[in-house]
Image 1 (cartoon, helix red, strand yellow):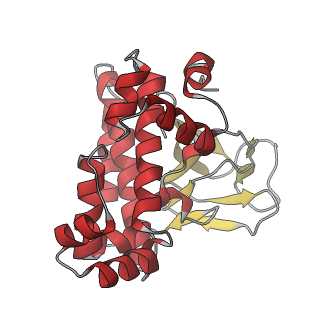
Image 2: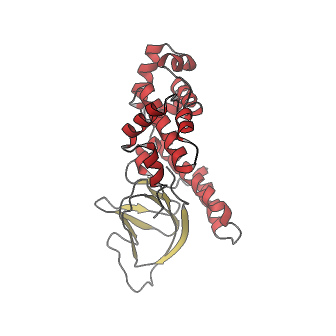
Image 3: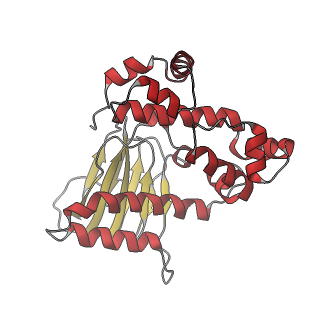
Length: 278
């Protein structure tokens, strides 16, 4: 889903204050309270009170404000100080990752005093790198690590029997997903995937579909098209090679499947180029 380099900055505010972030079609944003407290005010949503150590994450583009109070606004700026770490990820939502698609519009991850948190460690390390002049090269990878731990923290606190994360917890479904991801061009069938997962064909197909909400072969096609789109966008390999790597022996059959998935032919998709980050 990545479209550009993520970014982050440290912000210091003194009450009364209010900052608004308009909706952008290709970004996901986060705010971490390092000192003081503030309010997250989603456009058309309920206010969320954020305290020291809390993390707010908006996985989809949604306009919102942060302020010292629900009715906060510009003023004399002589009140209490709030320090925030804010940032954004530029993403391609036309191919949303299931782990993000399953999230609500606003994620609030409260700090847990006395509890070891990999998320907190990632925030601390990111802050250290941003506060040193020689840490710029590590910021983008650390922001990706931060995204990983925000997702993991949320899903661990909100377990479900269905969805992407539930599939990763199911040994059989997870094994099948690993096989599909590792070898998208392999001539997979429901039977061969079931054998890899150690289940009968019927039990495997039922469990896979019940967990992910889609059948094994439908998911296989989705993943093949995702890989093909990445190759077309990021490389100059021949269309024939893209088709082969996507599990198609016929370039024509691949082009037909690709157009059915994306609405445009592979050549035109490549010509459109990689979308630029806003």
